Length: 614
Image (cartoon, rainbow, N blue to C red):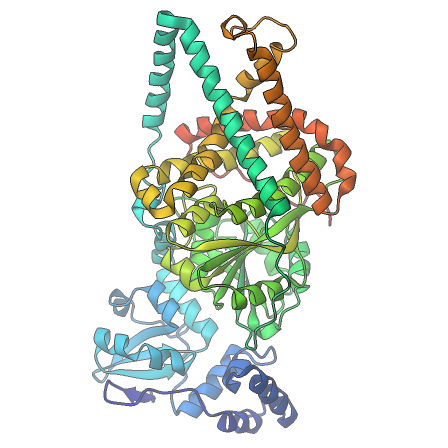
């Protein structure tokens, strides 16, 4: 018979062991010296935390050591659920994802009681009412945290993978997307255009170009407002004071076909300056990605970094991997990095300090992205200018204007409670970051920009750049369509100002890039070249059109120059005029993305990393 502590609703639940008893047990079992216990006790006293928290995160102690100490102090048994698997029928009452969240594992029924494993007795105590409601009389036994999670992963990997694909409510997810109607709508629009040309070609041409000019003006006006908000808005926030008690922070890094960069990534992550016992870095590896899994397995991972294997499923996307990894995260703050990232070593401390001092409605912090290979060639210079404009000027301006922040895919940090409340990421959306930014706003939460920089690797080749941008624009399109399924509900959720901003940020961006070739044709007017619109414009039309073009270009160039200066890269400013030859690539990407939206909406066009050093 397996020993343990019997608990039912009438019993007092188990609590964390007293620090004095815990310290004596650690010394008596030879796990830590008296001096080490004294140092750990002082650190915990300074943080206002129990000693057991430091013990659980002590790099010298294995999970089995900690479980042994916990079991001894609780007068309970220690069970290895990996070698002695649980009765999976018990997981019908409390699903695996919920067990992971609660930190417990219903193991087996014995003697009319259900033995429930926990790595931390307070977790068992906290959820005792739920456990007794589900199983009746329960009894605590101890398992190490790693073994408990591994056992749950083994018996429920398929279930967890399915949950990761469907965690976002259907009405806010794109997983029900059918591209056939878009193809039909496009055909109908083309037919309407042909009918219009046959009835009145002048009106059809005029309306078409009016639509193009409208979206050009709308996008330029929004960018101008963002620039003005950046220049004349409130001063940047001063550094926030560090909280008295530092939280555990989990950083998730999805990897797929990243065998070339795995070792370099691990070196960068180990440079993060945050207490090792409070930093939890999860490398998310796809089950069938043998090369990356092998590369990581050959690397001696520090205690702060662990690999989590994501089972195969219906889709293979970054958001699906993030949802799966969230089940195994330890932190109350969840961060996301990309494989090629080189974050500021002080970044985690800045994030923690800002969350501690921000309103609870601030659910997400977006860091600044920059490129460490900006000098590589012309394309990387233009890409760096675009990023400098976006992250240093436009996004801070949108924040000050109170508009929706379309998140970037990395250097993102969330309050875990909010992330779980929203269902995490939409596993089918190829721009899960922008979509999540919209869902945060719809649920009354705010995103703030924070001045901490992560270096990334810029795409330096034209076709890989087009493929990456086509995925982003395809995701923008599907995000817009998903949230506009019920436009009045969206309007109620975010209010008129954000609703108008949403139209410009998403639909306006798509229209401008997709219709850009027609817009470029208007340069024929001031140059005196033949154009269908020439005979339809009044006398003042061509000068007005010329002024419009000059104004929009001035706004674009001004934003790029300000962004380069704000990034400390004024050497990029002479390259600003060449952006006129850079953005046409985005038009090609837009049409590639729109075609994929019909035929391959969930296809993730992989961006290759590791081409450049840091």
